[in-house]
Image 1: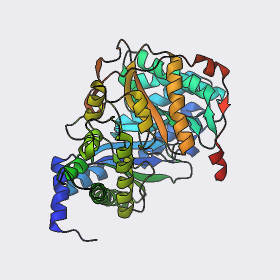
Image 2: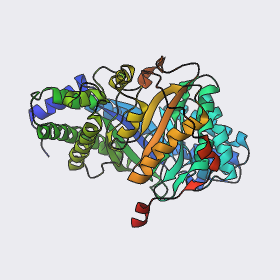
Image 3: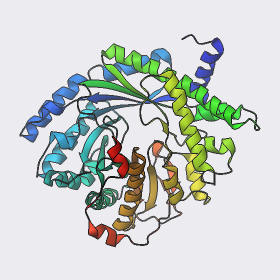
Image 4: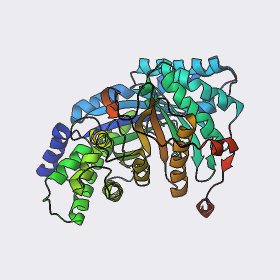
Length: 452
C-alpha cells in the first residue's frame, strides 16, 4: 500500500505533537519445559532460557526505533505462568523465584516482566494459596515483576472463595510498606486471553510458540487532534469515519514496526493491539476524546454510548489495517493515568459506579482507581465480584486494578508518580456484603457458556 506525502507528514505530526507511540513491545517466552522438582534447578534453567530468548531483543528494538523515528516506550517479556512452573508449599521458594525473575529483567534491561500468575476460576490448590501469600512480599521487594490472578471465566463462572482470598492480598500489598503504587503491578482478571501481552496481567500462552512478538500502539492524542479539526456541527458518522481513518493509520504504522522487529529476530508477530492507553500528559486522554465528541465532562450521561462508539470505530479501523489485531484493542480508562478522567472524578462527574458501567464497553475494566486505604476487605470483594460478573455475562475480558491508599480518605489526592499519574481517592459504597462471601462457593457459569 502506498501512502501520499500528506499522509506521511500527518503520521510524523502524530509522533512529534500528539504523543503517538508504540506503547509496548512484548516478547512472549515459553518456559514450561524448565520445570523441575527443585526450585533452584527450575530457576537456573529458566534464567538460561530467558537469557537466550531475549538475546538481541532490546538492541533490535532500539535500532528500529532510531531508524524509523517512532518512540517505543516499554520493552517487556511475558513468561509461562509461574503457577505452572512451580508447585511448592514453601513460600520462600516463590520469593526466591520472584526475585530471580526481577533480577533477570533488570539485567536484560526490561521495563516489566509478567507471568507471576495463578488461575483460580475453578479451585484453589494448596500451592496456589502459598503463591497468593507471597504476592504482597514479592511485589514490594521487586521493581519489574507483575502479578495477575484469574478468579472467573464465562466457562467456569465466578469463584467467590478465590475473591475472598484475593481482596486481603490487594490490601496487604498496599499496606506492607505503605506503598500503594505497588498495587499497580497486581491485577484480578476475568476471561483473560489465552496469550496476554498486557501488564500487569501479561503471561505467555500454552502452545503459543517458544518466542512470539506482541505490539501495543497508543494514540489518544492523535485521535483527539483529528477530531478537533472536524467542524463542531459534523454529523456523528463523520466523527466515526475520522476515528476509523486515524485508527487505520496508527495500526498500520504499528504493524510495520512490529513486523520489522519480528523479522530481524526471526520470530512470529502474533498480535497488534490498537489501544488508547492514556498518560498524564495534557491532551493524551480518552476522556478528552469523549468530551470533544459532545459531552461536558467524562462520566456525564452519554459517556457510555460514546465510549462504545470510540471502541467500535477503533477496532473497525484497526481490522482493516492488520490481520493480527489483538482482542484487547480499544480504549483503556485508568483513572490516575488519564488527566481528564482524574479531573472528572474531582468535580463529581464520575463515580466508581459509573466507571463500572463504562467497563461494559471499554477494553478492560476498573483500572488504576485510588480508594480509601481503610476499606473493608468485604467491600473490595464486592467490587471485584461485580466487575467479574460483567465479564462473565458479556463473555469479555474485564479486570480490577485498584489502589488502596493507606491514610487517605475520599476526595484527597494521591501522587503515584511518572506514567502512573495522580488522582483523587474515590469514595466507595461500604454497605456490607459480608454475608454473601461467608456463604462461599462458586457462582455457576451463565447459560451463554453452553453455546460454545
